[in-house]
Image (cartoon, rainbow, N blue to C red; front, side, top):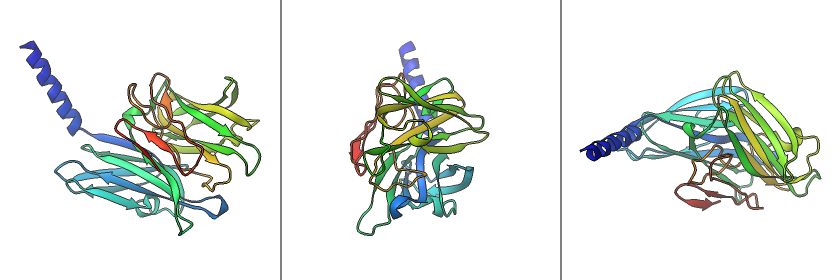
Length: 288
């Protein structure tokens, strides 16, 4: 009898979670000009897996703070493609940041940021979303396990680091560490409200020649997600938002891209080419 009661409780708990509020974060969207005449624009996809209409509330967290809100209503089983959400949803001419989304039921969200300047073809990276509950919380440290940066212009690679501070009062310490364990630079971030922040490695360290290193993101208060983008120096990426890995920690036993908790088993390592990245997620692996 006890076993049946436990089984029933488990089923009810699962049903509650499946039907409960869902909050997702897409860590990077952009509408911005980049170096070398590049033009980076994002596209987002949302999917409603239920048999009923679903209202999804979206908000953009930009470098200036909260930058707009929008609501989309998806029909049963509908997949919606949103072109250029920075403009089409929030009416902004130029901005970059994190996209937060909430609904009263489960839904899916992902995005792509691509250089659309050349009509012969585009390149960029796909970005998966993560649940807000998977973000780094106070006292947790996320690690982006690969960083490489070359000082010489037009050679090697360059790395940009970004953090989305998700709630008022969030405080984060960003640390750049080389492969010997030497701390090369630190920066403390404090946000009165939700905020998007990004800087190249050159702005975070005194000597930016780092053949191999990592980024550590420690949340001192509040919650945050973080990512780093390692780009070929000869490629054109927007200075405010390179297309990069989605940020946040994965639970032990599954894989995710971006910053990961020290105690998790997830990891991300970028291949050399900026036009190809591999994301290994809980369900599938894909490349762009």
